[in-house]
Amino acid sequence: MEEIVALCKRRGFIYPSSEIYGGFGGFWDYGPLGVELKNNIKKQWWQFMVYQRDNVVGLDASIIMNPEVWKASGHVQAFTDPLVECKKCHHRFRADKLEGDHCPDCQGELTEPKKFNLLTQVLLGVTEENKRQAYLRGEITQGVFVNFKNIVSSSRVKIPFGVGQIGKAFRNEITPGNFTYRSREFEQMELEYFVKPEEKSSREIFEYWKKERMNWYLSLGMNKDKLRFRPHDDNERAHYAKFAEDIEYQAPFGWSEFEGIHHRGDWDLSRHKLKYLDTETNKEYTPWVIETSGGVDRAALFFLIDSFVREKERVVLKLNKSLAPYKIAVFPLLANKTELVEKARGIYQNLQKSYSVYWDDRGNIGKRYRYQDEVGTPYCVTVDFDSLKDKAVTIRERDSMEQTRVSIDQLNSYFQKNL
Ligand code: ATP
Image (cartoon, rainbow, N blue to C red):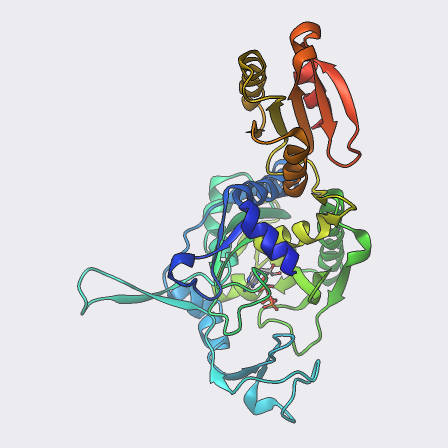
């Protein structure tokens, strides 16, 4: 973990928030490379969950909503009991229902009982006297439910259908930690999939989404041996869930959840008093919801950990190409030879139209390769003296370190094929 944290800081993936003032517990900033990685994860998610499906549409709801939403959803009530939290596994227990003074799940030490409310309060309004209390959303989910009617009436969705959303959520975590793993501000990527209220078919759909979500992580190169499903016990299930399973990653700090697949039943829609009218049968009913709820930050962290490889002479991030912050780096062999720089500059500007490309003319080629390896750039293009004659460049591939000579006018099609 120390190496990952250091790399993130050194290369501009993740910094502590407001660091010049000593940081702020549970908040992080994504630097020039981190923002690219996170955007790529979100882009891939949207492609897979929204664009590639006939019956899934997108949404971007507001972060602050009418506080009534959180009363109806149960979040105001569910988190105000006196709770203790395990300092190790972070499971929370009602202090009044606990037998013994250690965590029943892992025997870890428990915090003092506190009235927890994970919702972050904000005060809105112009004058000090009339400020209205509201909340930063504790999960992005509720934005979908409160728009259920709008979405059904304004788009052509019919049950079963899904709504995908990516956005920030905030939780007043009392023990943020493990780098970005447990933050107070984080991003979620979620699908709410509305289905008929039937035990058997909804269970099948739950299983379908479990597989889809696992396959997505695998398709982006995550190590199969480090992934597993873990069903929730009865006592850890959230107040809204009929049943739930987590996708966990074997992190350096132990198996850790980074996505939950939840069967929310009719909990939310019935709390918001929302129903669906089946126009074919003319019957009204409350749909059930299968939810896939992943953390963008946790996914980013685990993609970084999973792709981090220390080889004899180098550190490489073997990130899937689609996630790599820079796809290509372009170098003139020497920085002080105008013909080389001009030629390389032309190639760089041309590739910039289609890819995120890095320009480097500092130090020697070996050093530039090491730098690109550390940030996971799949391809380096070098313009050398031969390039001026044979109109070709050397492309070096990150994982194999193999070098190939490719003609400059073939570069676009080369990258189209390989990226
Ligand atoms: P945990 O048990 O770790 O607190 P949770 O079960 O409360 O997580 P959910 O409410 O199911 O989490 O949220 C769905 C996803 O949102 C999680 O799988 C995770 O990826 C992300 N997430 C939740 N809380 C945090 C947090 N404090 N920091 C970063 N990501 C989070």
